[in-house]
Structure formats: C-alpha cells, structure tokens
Length: 260
Length: 364
Image (cartoon, rainbow over all chains, first blue to last red; front, side, top):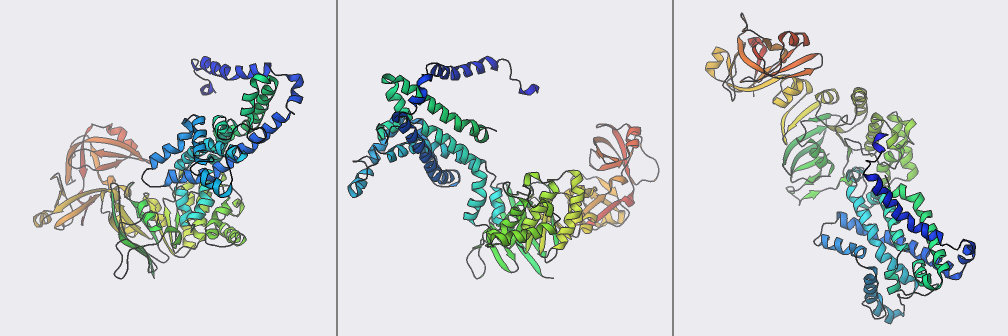
C-alpha cells in the first residue's frame, strides 16, 4: 500500500511528536516505587480520590449528555436571534482558565451567590465544598465538549431521513427518538468520551469551587497536586492509577468513536 | 374512475419558479418527466408536505392538504407530512441504516400507533409480497440496490397511502439492475391500489412504467399525454432530444403553404416539405436517420440540400450521431462505416440533404 506510506518529511516530525508525548510517561514510570506500589494504591488517600474521580467524571458525563444533546439541537436547528452569541457563550468554558470558571460558579452557587444564596436560605443546601459541587464544576467544563461534538453531528446528518420518517407518519417526537437520536449515537458517544476525559482531568474549577477535602471533593488530580511534594510515592501511584483508568477507557473506545 | 390527486403546485425556491398542475386517477401511473433542475423533485416534496406551497392547492380524495391562500370558505390550510395519506419513495431510498429491513417496513405502522408485534407481522407480509421474505433481518447496507428499492417501496406501501410518490425510482441502480428492476417495478406498481406519481428524467422509465406523461421544464408543464403521443409529437426540444429526433421551431404562411415551404425560426433558413404547411407557429420534426451526409454537392432528387460543417460526433449505440453546425443545427445519424468513409471530424465541411417527405410539420 504505497499510499499508506507517509511522505518522508513528515516522519521526523511525527517521531518527535511521539517522543514528546511518550518520554514524560516513561520518566514517570522510571520513578515509580514498584515494590511499594501495591501498598500505595491501597491507601485511603488514593482509593478515596479514585472513587471520587470516577463518580464525578461519570456523573458529569451523564449530566452533559442529558443537558448537552437538547442544547446542541437548539444550536444546530433553532432559528432565533443571538444564536451565534449563545454558541460563543456555550464554548466559553473551553477557553477560559478553569479557575475563572470555578470563581464564576462560586458567585452563582456559593452561599451568598446569585442562585446559591436564596437556595441556602430556603433549604440550607450548599453546593460548594460537597461532592455535588465537584460534579457541577466537572459538568461546567465538560459540557461544551459534548455540545460542539453533537452539534457538528446534527449538522452533518442527512435531514432527509427525518423527512422520510415524517412521510411514514412519524410526528416530531417519534422522529427524534427513533431516527435522529439513533443516527446521532456515534456523535453522542464521541462527545461523551471527550466530556468524560475533560472531567476526569479537571482541576482548577474543582479546587476553586469545591475545595480539597479528602473523601468529599479531593479528586485524583487534586490529590496528585497535594501529594507531589510531601508524599512523592503516593503522587506517582495516583498518577499511574489515573493513566491506567484513562487507557482502559481510551484504548477500546477511541478508535471506535473518534476515529474513522 | 375517480380522481385521487388534484393539485396546482406553486413554489418559489431560489431560482426555481414552479407552477405545475397535476391530476392522478385511482389506479393510474403518472410520470413526471423533465430535465435536471426542472423542479420535479420539488413537486414531490410539496405533495408530501416537505415543502410548503407558496400558491396553489393540493387535494387528495377531496381533502385539502395545502392551500396557502385559503379556500373560498376557509383560512389557509397546511396538513403536515405525517398526517397526509401519501407515501414517498426517495431516490436513494433512505432506509434507516440502523434498522433491519423488517423494522424499516414496520416503522410507519408503529408511528401510526400499531403495536410492535402487530406492525412486525404486517411488515413481514409486505416483504413477502415483494419477494423479500429472506431479507427481513438484513440491515440496509447488506441489501443490493434492487432489494433496497423494494424495501423502500414496501415501507411506503405499508401505510396504505392513497397516493404513492416515487422520486427517480431507478436512478440509483446500475445499468444491469435497472432493466430487471424496471420490469419488476411495473408489476409491483400494478399490484397496488391508489394513484402513483413517479419522477424521472429517463424516457424509457417513463414509457415502461407510466400510463400518462407530464413533461415539466423550467417549472412549467410543457406537454402531457400518453407515452406514445408524447413520443410521436414532441412539443419541445427536450422531448425531441429524448425520443431521438430533431425538433426545430418554425412558422408557415399562406404563401409558404402553397409553396410547401417552412421557415425556421431565428435563422430564416427554409425547408421544403411534402405536405401543406399549417399557417402560424409550427414544430418541424426530422428523424436523424433521414439526414444524409455527402462530401460533394449531391445531385438528383433531394429537395433540401445545404453546405455546412460537422460540429460534433457522438457515438450512440451501434450508430453515430453527427451534429451539424450552421443555420440548420440538425443531428444526422450514420453508421460507423459511413463515418469512416466520409472521415468526419468536428470542422469537416459536408453537404447535407433531406427529402421533403422526411420533414414533418405540426401546428403548435
């Protein structure tokens, strides 16, 4: 297959890219305390963070799908003034430093926040510094990835399939459930995968909005950051677990949902 | 015979200005024939409710489905596609890719509220009728073009529409499948009640499948009639080209009639004919086989001879069509042997001749 051989000029750059991505992981593995690793990963610091990271990343992904698919539909299909502005606002969390997002969340949902204040007065429920706060912070940064992926999927969908369904007697709701969403499934899956990856690695918004309480809001990235000076073994163990979890999800799914 | 469809389809869409009147009777197959961009597919989309009318009216079995200007007694009417008694088979079928053939056919029945089991039983019966029972479980990607078309037909027919629309039903098939599917489709269309309207740009499809042709060009009906009538008396260059004859527009005067001469519009060229020429606008039809080509000026009987040059040479089956330049832009059809003998290439000067009896003139 001659056409599958890259032009020679690409090869050194591709090799450099591979080295750039792989060498840091190699360095991490080289410093790993292999003999104590089994004990390290069983420490509550690690298990709490792992549990919290998985719960919050999967919850944020579920919330992103629940809210993001309808939003993508509105952005792709809706006809209303200010749509381009709305689209820019929706993608803002992707561009903004997550710390800014975290601060904005505090102003909105904090004890004296725009929404959080009245809610606290009425129910004494507080979002920040709770696991729910972690999930909200993760959703805030992950949702745009789902929205833009699904919106692109909707735009490239052949709408005549929906026409065909309509001529067969399907109302709008039936068309959405039985034709549009099934055809959109690959985009939703790809968007969910990107959202999940973004949520798993989330740091800035989480630490700002939810704080760093072990077992409640301390996710793996936070735990790594805290442990990296005082407890290097734990930091490396946490990092390895994080890499293992990421690979376990990415290897089987990346080609299927993001590749050709 | 009752008329199922009565419609006047008026749609403005970009540069397309569509205004087409149509009827279709119970049991009738009507073909909408026309070149690409004539607005044929838009007519189907309007009838199905996928493209609202700008003006006109669509009526099926007396029920008004679209009337943007309202009716004598009522406000504007628009019945959405899912509530019209109309089925549509798309050009590329658009079978739902993630459903089996059976579920595709059952879709319309499910959408209309039938239970899952009930819809699947009925769908299986439809597949059986269209000789697809063995493919019920197949995904659309695993079906051949002809099979996919039958599944699409079964899917549209399963909801028992009063009017079935088919958009270029054979266009997505390769040449070999076309011949077979064309014959099958005629049989299948004959099996079902209601009116059927198909769109095609292929004369052969229209002739084989339809009882009546409606020729649409540039958003307007230019001719309507049985396939035989349309083929025998083409009223536009497009139809003439389709049936393989030359069509020129001309006019005749009383004096011309006495002289048996017709003047070709635009150029002033004159052709001698055998029969009296009707006064006024006329259509002049010349079969390509009747145009003879010579390298020298021909002597003898032909009443029409003129010098011209070859514009283009196009193979057409076992014959070759030679397009002539000049005031009489006719097409001559010759054998490959004659072409070789005359050594005709674009630009070759030739003499053309045409007998008076081979020039047919129709009043327009």
